[in-house]
Structures are given as structure tokens and as C-alpha cells.
Length: 112
Image 1 (cartoon, helix red, strand yellow):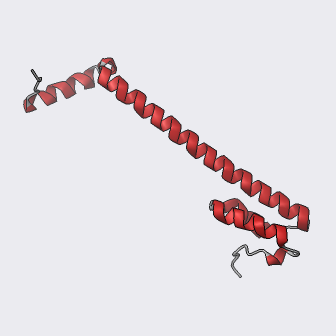
Image 2 (cartoon, one colour):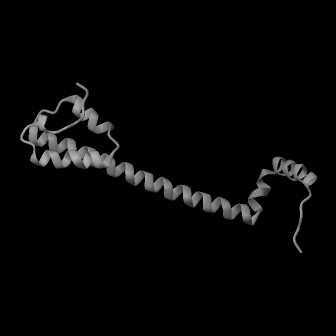
Image 3 (cartoon, rainbow, N blue to C red):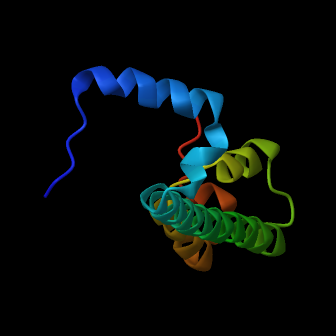
């Protein structure tokens, strides 16, 4: 037999949990949902952290390569690289560094 909660009972249940919030933690369904939510949040945070770390590493490598090959790199180019979150664009610039003889040959899409 399935338990049914009548509509007028919900306000009593709500009041109970407002007065005794620790009681909700004793419900197995709530505990499972909370654990699952925490696990998903951890995984998403871990993935986001990995992507941001990879992006920051690519930015640093590009700046190091530019400074090694061209000595002086204008601050505007460094700022452009540091604010770029598009990994494909960062990869494109790294490829351009390999073949460029002059810094001006790399298309940093800076405003004129």
C-alpha cells in the first residue's frame, strides 16, 4: 500500500522541518540526494579547476615562448594572452610563434 500525504498536511510537515531542521538529515532519501549533489559538485569543480589550470598553463607557455624568441613583448600582447580563454586561439598563437620571424607576423587581434 502506498502512503499518501494529503494537501493540508504539507504545511504541518514544513513547519516541523523549520522547527527541527536537523530532522531532515535523518531521512535516507535526503541523505542520498545530498551525497549525490555533493559528489556532482565536487566533480564539476574538479573539472573546472583542471580546465582553468590547463588554460593558465597554455597562456604562460605562450608568453614564455614569445619572450624567449622576441625578447621584448608589448604589455598589450601579454594582457591579450592573459585574458584569452579560448584554448583554440591560444594553440593557434603557439603555432604561429614557431614560424614567425617577427612578432608582427603573429595575429593577436589587437585593436589598432
